[in-house]
Length: 111
Image (cartoon, rainbow, N blue to C red):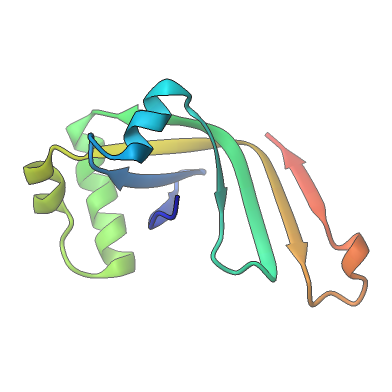
């Protein structure tokens, strides 16, 4: 499922509504994969999503999110009873299709 999100404090953060399919799937199994929108310069993270309920952290996330996307997502999160999730990467992959040697451009990191 596509999501907008931010990279902050060495993790990927995103929000969704509590009754969405994403939230229900994460509740059933927190393991997930996150990929960038640029498939030709791919970065893919594997990790487990953890719901963040600390409202002090929410305020910080809203500031970072608003700086990236504009607007103010804070009131929307509060009014919808939204959820914020943090994905701590366990493994990351990168590959650059524009590299001189595409086959050798793949890289893997373990955290």
